[in-house]
Length: 111
Length: 117
Image (cartoon, rainbow over all chains, first blue to last red; front, side, top):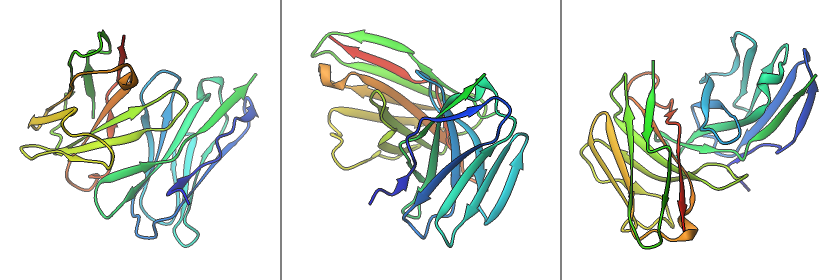
């Protein structure tokens, strides 16, 4: 079982819709969870971090964490073509500050 | 804030030569820096973790004598790929984090695309 799992996609949504990206993780001791956006040929950019159960909103982005279900998600409201990218879920593992990344979900926002 | 630079952005070298990549945190002190490698259409693979003034901790399967990491100060870490071969061609990305309440957040440099001919 992979430590951090994501559906590779592509996930296609129309412009203006809500995009929902999901991630599951295997280490119950993980305490920190992150979403990164990576455009093709570029390095990842941190867009959200979440540390406690529940929702965390930042602009059009909402991260949701459910530690009991070992599940973290990212919602993007009012999706724009510029949101088209690969979204990487990252989870702290091993009790230290290392992150384990999922393989990413490719999001395509269509006009 | 949290800007990380990386140099060079792109390098082409001949097989058997060495290449040094620099990673700098520009507006914060990075207690820990990480080096990743990413092959096309694959996710990030952590190569090593380095703390300022300490020896780097390498991930399983990463040759420490081939990938030399130095973290000489709180703002600079270097990765040297020694005796590079075509299979070392990849996208190398560093990240930096700092101690404190957001100690697990990692900020990435723009990456270095290495091509070994």
